[in-house]
Length: 171
Image (cartoon, rainbow, N blue to C red; front, side, top):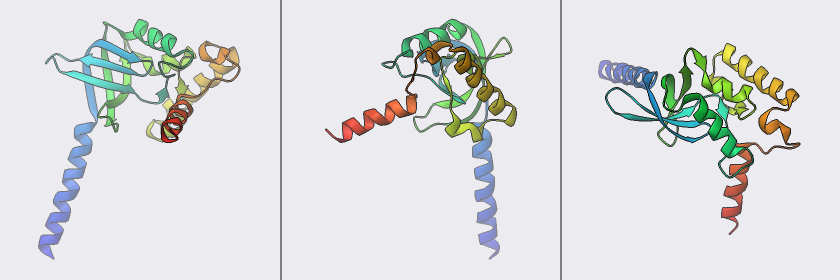
């Protein structure tokens, strides 16, 4: 019984340390922008970090506004020093985090510009304050018909990806 408690205790400590290891901060220069919600940051040790912007989902490259979204994110962060507050890794091994540039939340800026959705499927991972900010920013962008909200019926990226998967499955 004592040995079991020791193993359970060690397992708990391992899980806690693993969570701490995933959460953290990445500081460096943005050296790549893959699309409207993914960047590459090069840190001082010359290690590249793929970052998926938390709390948002931007149009895919082949979707309407996909290129505009990427261009806008590039104009905000490319070649600039950023701080990324990371919380976890996604299924593709990218760190998921909030990109901060000059004290400004670049993720939120994408939603404000109407070039990304507030990704409500993952809003539970956001702080209550961020959840409210991102949701309000999307609503305001919709009402002002900024960016992708100029389209009468924009297709959310998650719906676009699902449509592609369904087409491939039916081939």
